Length: 414
Image (cartoon, rainbow, N blue to C red; front, side, top):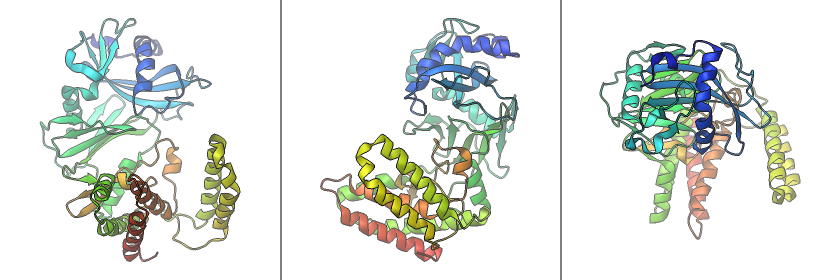
C-alpha cells in the first residue's frame, strides 16, 4: 500500500498532487460508468472537493467534474457552501501496490505520475474486504474526517454479513449484505438531505410499513452537507412490479388483483406523506401547467416530429389553470412506476424516493400533486402492455381501472 502521508493532502498543493495522479484515469473511467450523468459531454476538468482515507488502501473522494463550457478551476466551494457548476461524484477507490487478476471490471488503471505513481487504482465497492469494512463503519457510528456514520439505535445489524454488489442499478451503486440489508451508495451528490433517507425515515415515524425504514446512513460535512449512503432492510424474495407485470403478460394472466392492491399501497404511502410533511399550496395546477409547457417546448425542439401536436397540448395544459379539482399538493414519490415497487408475499412495498436524479434536489423535495405519481403508474401499465406483440391495450386498461379503484378506496377520492 502507498504511504499514509501520500493519501492525506493537507493543503491545496496536496490535493492538486493527488489529482495529478488520478485525473487521467478518471477522465477515461468516469464516462464509462452507468451512473455518470455527463456521458454526452467530455470531462474537461476535475477538482478534488474532499478526500478521506477510510482505512489503509481505501480512499473516499468527492470529485467535481467540469465539462465543456463549465470549468472547475477555482470552483471549489468553502465548507458549507454551494458547489460550482457541473457535477459532484462520490468515489471509493482502492489503492494497491500491484494489480490483481481478481479485480476484473473493478480495475480503473495503474497510476503513471504523482504521489500514487506505480500503484493500481480500482473501484473499492467491488472489493469484498472494502465492502465489509464499510459496513463495519455503519455498525459502529462515528466520524472519519468530514464523514459521519450514523445509525438507528433500535436497529441491529449483525457482523460478518457477506457483501455482493448489484449490477442492475443505473444512477447509484448498491451493496447487499447477507440478503438482510441493502446499502445504496449515492454517486451523484447534491447538497442537502437525500430524499431516500429523509422520506423513508419520516414514513417510519408515521408507522407506514410500505417503505423499508433506514437502519444506518453516512453523510459528509465538507465541502457541503450532503447524504452519501443509506442502509435499509433487504427483501430477498421480492420481485419488482415491472418483472411481475411482464410475467403476467407472457403467461396470459390477469393482473387486476395485483394492480388494485398496488393502488391501495400507493394511497397509503400518499396519506403517510401528507401527515409526515407540511401540506403544500393549493395553486399547484399553475406550476404544473408551466412545468409541463416548458418540457413540451424542450421536447419539440429536440424532436421536430412532435411540433404538430404542440398547439393542442398547450391548450390542454392551459385547461389546468381553471381546474380546481383534485387533492392539494404534498410530498410525493416523484418517479413512480412499476420498477419502483416490490411485491414480497402478498404485500407491495414502495422504494427509491430519490426522484429523478437529474433534477435539482430542491425541486424533487417540493410539493406536487399526488396525481403525478398516479399518472406515472398508469403510464407504466401501458408501457408493459406494449412489450407484447401484438400489444395488449385491454390488459393495460383493466390494470389502470383496478389501480385507480384500489387507490380511491383507500384515499377517499378518485
